[in-house]
Image (cartoon, rainbow, N blue to C red; front, side, top):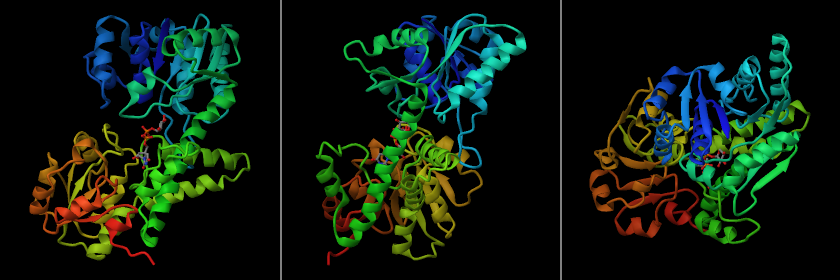
Length: 448
Ligand code: UDX
């Protein structure tokens, strides 16, 4: 099939590359000339495991092209995917200017039937606005061309995006046009050959499903983070509690990890946007408001643990910081908890020696102008002369460190772990003091 994808960020690029991998002919369009140049040269502008190889292979086969030429891109695909960014606006609602401008571009150039597919995360009702934007352009041109607008939200996780797209657990399609449904079914047939995974529904329910999924996952995390605070006080271990409840199939094991707070391009933005939609319609989403508040507080949990140990004044102190990206296997720094941790430390006069396996460049941009932060190129180098180690992101290479070398390098044998990577007893055996999240055993609290 002929497919056009507008936007070459995470969602757009993964969609375009994976659809090409299944034999479709895909043209990816972006207004950012720099990005398109990188892609035309065989590179990718983001860090995403496995993606570069797929891009290169399909570009070489001529199935995947990149362009800034709007007319050419719109002419190409019967299916026009919109995968542009929807950043939060001032009031927390999703900013739709890029989505609507993509819609207008399609309306301005289309000459035959198109299925316009909203893949970006967009609030309920956006498909109607996209339909209107296209209609206005057609009216302006004085032409009458048939088209359908479909909602097909993306559920991929950064760092696992290719696998999530190629082996989806569900494909949500919101559509009310029969021809569009046939085309969407045909496009996704290769991904769902052995098991029917495509769920067809009305457009608004599809749009809502995306927010509901992310809001539910964020809720689980904030819920566990709050329970972790209490676990420390009552002398329980949240990791034991996680296992204990996760084995109940009604609860399930995923997304129950207490930590330093959730970040990224989706959860913070989507929770805010859903709360905002609720306000617009006069429905107060109390649970989600609390989810957001709890997460904002949770991002300070590591800073607070440092202060509990060293006092408010951190002048003259240096902290090793492991992990800057908002989660492992990505270089994405959007809403990363590390930004709050660094601020909590340097604001009190400390210096930070930070190491991240891939996000250093992005972090340098995000932390530009923040005094007292230096970036080193190995986990061990971050430890040299530091008062203590603070772990913010659970990269695999942090999971089995040389504890003896760690103790030797640190001024105080103290590890403050925001991702509960280790068995407290193991660190104790290596002569390290271990402070984790929600683990009284590690944090030394006593049960009553
Ligand atoms: C998320 C959704 O998972 C995905 O379906 C959607 O399409 C986009 O948003 P992503 O933002 O890439 O994906 O990352 P995810 O793996 O979901 O993690 C989000 C944040 O939650 C990270 O900061 C992570 O560290 C945190 N997290 C996750 C926890 O703190 N605890 C957990 O148990 C799981």
